[in-house]
Image: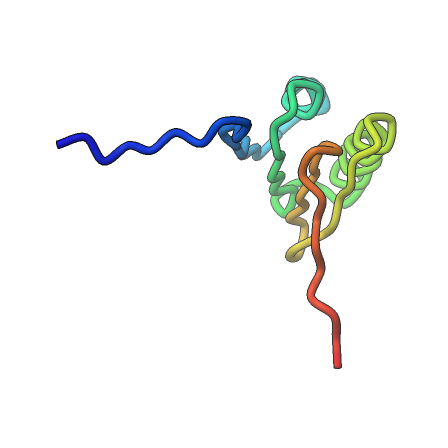
Length: 92
């Protein structure tokens, strides 16, 4: 029995998880954004200077693609291309 239902026009979503230890690895992760993937980056184990440099770089890449980004935890960021808007819960 085949339970797979294909919906036309729906694309698969991928989330790329990254724990970069260098700026070079962050540049590689930025290619995921260019390819339309969500990017979840953990920078909490880096020095504050390195974490700031990488988050600034990825934020710039995201902005150049008309995407969005947000910090979802201490040193953990979500970068999304334009095709994946980030919806934030409003505070009451």
